[in-house]
Length: 139
Length: 411
Ligand SMILES: Cc1ncc(COP(=O)(O)O)c(C=O)c1O
Image (tube, rainbow over all chains, first blue to last red; front, side, top):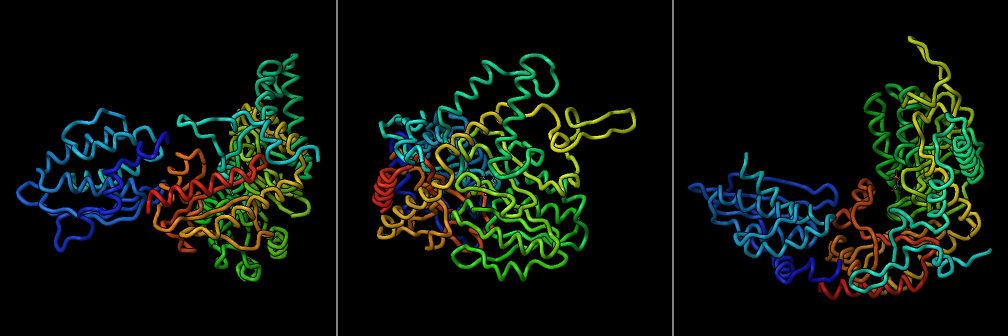
């Protein structure tokens, strides 16, 4: 790592210290559990839909700062959005982190994860929650 | 001893003078994953391509002869290094292939339904999964020996697990998770008393201590070149002469045959029988060069050097708040591997912050999920610093400072 802030931007440190939407929902439509087998990060995601939108979303999990902050940012960004819109945004995120695609405005705070694409060992940490939400939205 | 371990041997390793893009000097403490290569090994590989390269044991021309001689010499060097005969040495791509060769080549022929296979909870996945899968193929019982709380093996427990039905007992010489040196001679004795074969995973122990296959009475011993200053892609499978012919070749093709007819084939003698296809000759030459290098600096001193660094790291880290150190406190049972965690910081984050300080360590489950799960290690992962001949106490000072930096940033 060239510098600490390369990977651990202030927003990321803030989310890992104070994760948003952390916990479980009393009622939900979809639950997805996913692990990153290469390093053991785990996430459990619950989603409640209403009128084609993500009405509520919460996560629980165990993992590194990157994976937990990424999950927190994801829930904040996608809560209240239209399902198709959420699918598109999560694809944008995964493209940005996995293939180094330039960040798009729609990603808002999640753009700070663009630096992760230079650290192949951490890509799976950053994308775990986004793969989980894609699964929740697809089937 | 001709060299002093630490600063003096460091000069032979060009990569260790790496400066990271942020200006930090590289401190390489990931030796249990792979070691760096001395200039002697690097030159041996270049020289092989400049002066020797041809196919082996096939081509009766000047370079062909030279290559065959180099390959045979490498085998002799490896044999001498572990006190074996040269026809007991099979070259493989590494420990993982060696163990799979045993599990398929010997296991499929000799293990049947109702038999038992005994392994330790602390095995690397490479010495765990092939045996588990063999047991599943054969409907045999896969028995995993539990450990003491500090991760060490209790001999009386091994005695209880090994029975007259046990066909295989597999155990690492040194574990890669916590660097624990296992009592292989005693375990081998228990295995043989019950009529089982004794399989030793030497991936971590062979690089760090003198190895004598006759003394440990191993039937099989596996190790990897890249963890002992040699190239990646070359490894060794030692098989005791009295059983080598009972191993069925699991790759067939060129180089391993005696006579091929349309409807049948007879195979060459060991070890050729187990090396189908064009082998990794430059890898073998590089490994032999690494062994000569290790012999020159003296295998007897390596463990002592690693323990000195381990003791120093313990001394410095045991007073650091939030740091958890794993493994037994008795260093007589350990090599130069230190697994640790910083309470509240995931080991991946620890590794990234150490990296920003120039310090290369490994983080994760170290391909040893069973022991981490068994001991209930936080995050099911640890940070792991591992030492080798070129490390010195000043490397550990940098490590300790970097750990303090990690604590500060994740306060
Ligand atoms: C104890 C042990 N066994 C087996 C292996 C596998 O070695 P390789 O990846 O070279 O096949 C390793 C290396 O990580 C190890 O430390």
